[in-house]
Image (cartoon, rainbow, N blue to C red):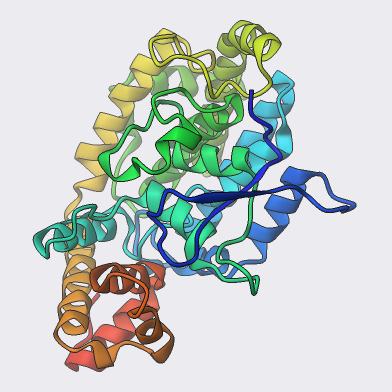
Length: 383
């Protein structure tokens, strides 16, 4: 069984080089995962999450969730779940804080478009945000003279690159012997994966209802929403009241958190007795942590409603199209003329693939910086 407090990072010259080095911790008043958390919190990529889109473009209103507020909500839920299940709360916290750090501007549409552009341009790996988060923390952030990355623990990095399930990808072959990508990740990573699902489902409903893009009538087609509604009514709050939206969101989080805890206790206790971090559980084995079958089915149906009624709302689609055009314009401009890249990025061309340098630079941008850069290059304003 591996030591979760092992430090891990790649050779400087080539991230995909399978040569790896391991470092043990020096004396420090913090425990290993607390050190990881502090390093993530203080890195520049984490700060940029404040101005990156979750669902709604960042400049549309101060109320909307951003990648940063979403990340903080996931962290809070993950800490609660871990504490109640007797898991390592700090490990769950740092995985949660890091899980979206590789996202592009403009939400998932930005990542999807960058993936398409890279593959059409002949890059074999494209763009994938889980892997990008891993690269940010092991390769792109520079905080030490001797090597790239934040020098995080093995368990933290494994939780970032894998969520609840095995993560066997062709472009991760050099990582596979170390991270056993055909296996389930740690229990803490599974907790974060489900905390993420709880957070984005509930807060997308909150944002969508507040700005009139979806109605409670749409949600009441779903049994999970009906159960949440019943719990809110028991508090003495009816649909027409101002507090209803707030209580509905809180009640949904509470219901899903309680369901996850109740349904996961036995599996967590069983696997924790075998190994503290269950990274070596076979993929054929059932997940030791998750929602009950009924709640998982209802949640899946609810997300289908949100996809149809909210994420495909014409206002969302229009804004995401504008974001996509921004990504296309930036990538095309930088590919046409590398001198448009900032000096720090041009310096990296000597040691990294051209397409990947451009993709890394675009992915690091906030929404407003990407739009500003587009405007500077093309004399136009999008969004």
